[in-house]
Length: 117
Image (cartoon, rainbow, N blue to C red; front, side, top):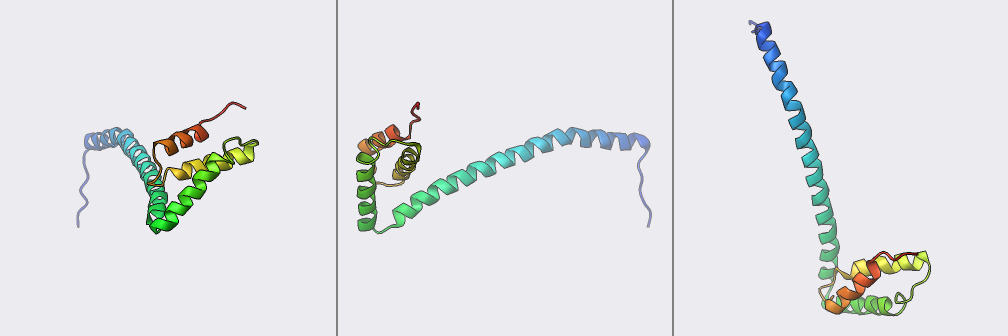
């Protein structure tokens, strides 16, 4: 067996080539991380929506009505940071229901916007 070695000039060409590849590899790795984060966010959101949609229709409608009623009554004049946070989370949850119509989306928007304190 013989080891093949290049000339010193060939070694410097290889080193130069690798040094040019390094920034490209960094960009590729960064791009892959961004793609992975976006994919995770999509799967997480669609997972919640899928769970709600997989409920039997009568149960899903009943849950929608109860949550909507809470948003209209308890959350309409929520005071205190804990209750406001609960209402914001419930409003975000409502987005997962296919029953959430224009009026529902308007209420969700009203409850999820950040209000000055």
